Image (cartoon, rainbow, N blue to C red; front, side):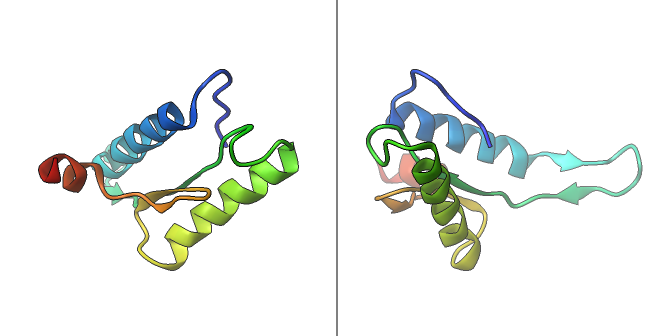
Length: 94
């Protein structure tokens, strides 16, 4: 879990997308000879837009993450929005 105080939902989604990209593009544990690639599933919820309680925010972020895990995988989803288009897809479409 990452908390981003004083951050709009839009900016939190930008951070989530950047972190997702950094994790998925890196090869982990290369010095140990393992060469592991990770496919992160990320969920985002924002105060007070999505919920006004800690429990509500955690539940909604968790729900968004499991939406990704149980459908597409390797992506970012936001509470009350759903799975976001991949950044590369969004950039080429725009």
